[in-house]
Each structure stands twice: as structure tokens, then as C-alpha cells.
Image (cartoon, rainbow, N blue to C red; front, side, top):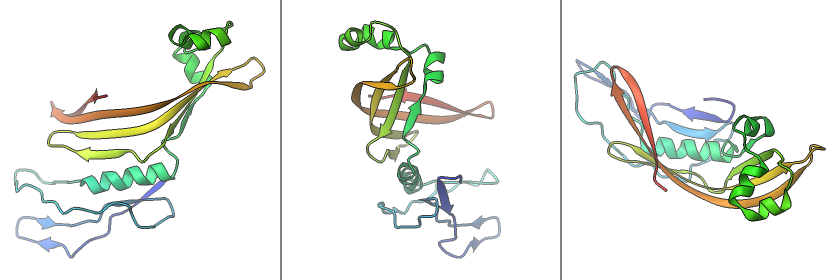
Length: 183
């Protein structure tokens, strides 16, 4: 897939060849790059509803998304540092946090740029629903002030629990997604 993850899409069984179609049963297991260890998840069987009005049907199981989440978590992909340049683009500074958290205002009278360090503390959980899928992420965010000598001073750390839903629809032959923050 990329430098962090690889996918095993080998056949589970021989293809079923019928007059009008071929049924390919592919594995779809995602591993951290170069690390083909067993997955902590168990694949549940599923079936695709019988339809015959399209040329190609693809189905992805919850297991595929779970192993993807595990692979990227293991590779550290969910650990992100948002540096000074990005924060200045959004105009995030100690002054902004100081207006929300009084202790930051006491510490930093002079506005300094900030750096955010976001870390996933658990493997994100992905659940497939009837018309959408839900992603639950547990993590922490540490906020640093970037001082004039380019050193950083930790301001605070907070734990984060986010639950979002994503629904995909096709409108005017375009795939459109809608994201909802549940909590």
C-alpha cells in the first residue's frame, strides 16, 4: 500500500466461474510493512447481496478495516506533530489557548506559536454500519509553546476520545462523503 502497510490479497479459495460472472474470494489482510505477524482480530464471514446490474462489485469487510487500523497504528501513522508553520497558518498561539485555559495565560504573557503533538493511545476501532462506518479514536494531545530560541515548553496534555461516523453516497456519479462527530 505504502511505506507503512502491505496488503495480502491472495485467494482464499479457487475462483468460482459461472456463465455470467467470476467470484473471487480474496483475503484482504493488511500488515505493518515487513511484519507478517498474526492479526489480533478474527475475520467473520459475510456475503454480498445478490445483484446483477453492474459489471463489478467490491466488498470490504470490517476485518479489512480493523487490520488496516492495526497496521497503521503499529507503524506509528496516528502519531502526528503539527509544527509551528501549520499552527501559524491556522493562527494558533498561546494567546488562543490562554483565552480558554487561564493557566496558559498566566504562564505566557507574550504570545508564542504552539506545536501540537497528537498520539493515538489505542488502536482505532472501525465498525461497519448499515449506511456508514464509525471510527473511535483514543489519544492524547500535548501542546507546546515554541520559544524564541526554538526550544519548546510543554503547556498541557489532554486525553482525547473521539467517535466519528462517515457515510458515503453517490450523487451525480460522484462519490460524496459526510463526516459526523458523534462525541
